[in-house]
Length: 232
Image (cartoon, rainbow, N blue to C red; front, side):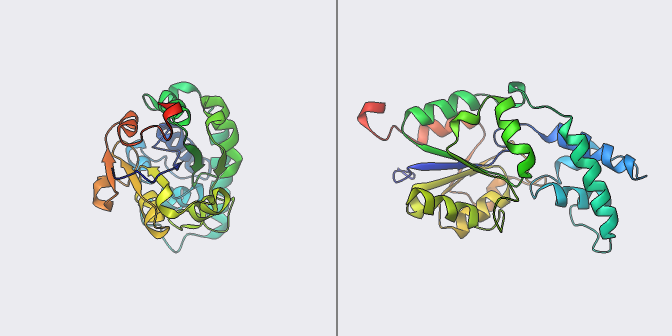
């Protein structure tokens, strides 16, 4: 079995566990209006998610995936501040979870896997979001985009988990919806699962060549059996 050595799983958040796209898009649009720009369209904003709030704002101000390098830093900072205030008003709840996320996380815990969260979302939003969505108790560790010196696609978050759990790379599985997740896993020499339903800049996650691509979150269970007979 491809994941026979896996003992722990790191999950992305936005586009993997929660459907946060609409709230992120709405906050970005509100921030643009606050600085005198026209609001972005939700369909465009969904393609800008995945590299943290700062990059989202740069893309929103540029109205493109590739940010305008001439954007004034003061404008970026001002817009980001408006975004943070706007996004803080969008409270998470269990309805934001993708189908079968909560039950699948519970089953993976029951089967004996260690679970962590590795997101590029600013840490100021992560803890409360996990609580409001009802999944905080599933994770032994979580890292926001500003918790470590580098964020995905850097391998640093995964390498930090490997060190804390004293695991080998093949024992840690990365599960996410974007190329940042797959690239981070490859850089850390960890296996990966790519989910097709999230936010990957409008591209099929299979392009990034994860070890396994899935269309539904709960299908993870078919590749991750119980680690001990007592969990079977």
